[in-house]
Length: 303
Ligand code: MN
Image 1 (cartoon, helix red, strand yellow):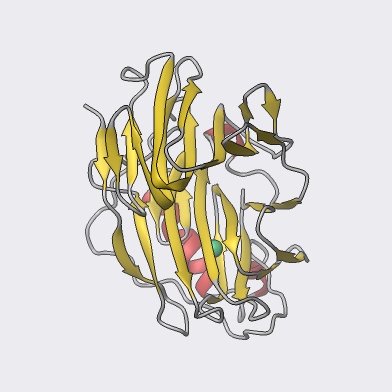
Image 2 (cartoon, helix red, strand yellow; image 1 turned 45 degrees about the horizontal axis):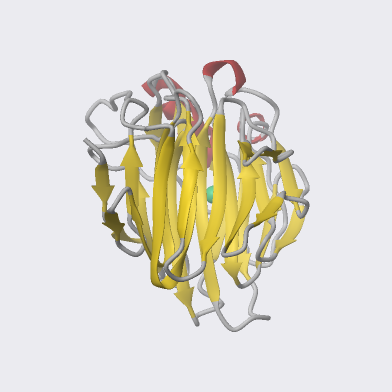
């Protein structure tokens, strides 16, 4: 059965107490292809709303996509990058990286999507890397616009670094517009409502909600139809990931021992040079860092 996941409100561990609308992971759906985390943030007039101090990641890529506003990214491999709407920030954590994110108040509103991509086993320990793309392919129709964030769509290929078969697209539809997605063979798909209203194969998707079609349910064409106010949506797809992953806090690993070691190394990175080698540190305007919480006393389960 297709699955409609309404978003749930999550308080972020930021200094401003803002919340995000989260759809993945969900108890009935852990991933769509390698996509394993979906947060929709705003729109809000609180342009200073995103103040996320230094924190680590492993085994994944973070994707930042802005619709409105501006964010400064800094990380432990020396990247300092401002991002604006229409651009993509992609951070490959691999073996380990630390970063911080700060929304800049030079604009009137802040509206963003943050996504994680799980790295397959063969790539999950690669050296950390950061990529900023302002050259994403854009395909224009008479009543729609598609920006390809990663992978291939409508015959256009984004140069964004991907480690498994996947696609990510921002699609803007004028009011009452039908768009037929040519599905890639073997892919599963999710459709995230970022603004406005639309239906997937006749099923309405609420704002910040995610509509999922498993690879067995995907026909050659998926029919999208926007409502009276038009729509902005994200298409997230990929081959089913096929590897169980262990996801805890900001880490993705395969075993609880690995997670425990990553947690320990991060929480000691300021006092112990050997422990800090994995994540490093860097200066930013925020200052401080976010410690990892206590591990739960129950065993973590791969999924
Ligand atoms: Mn992060």
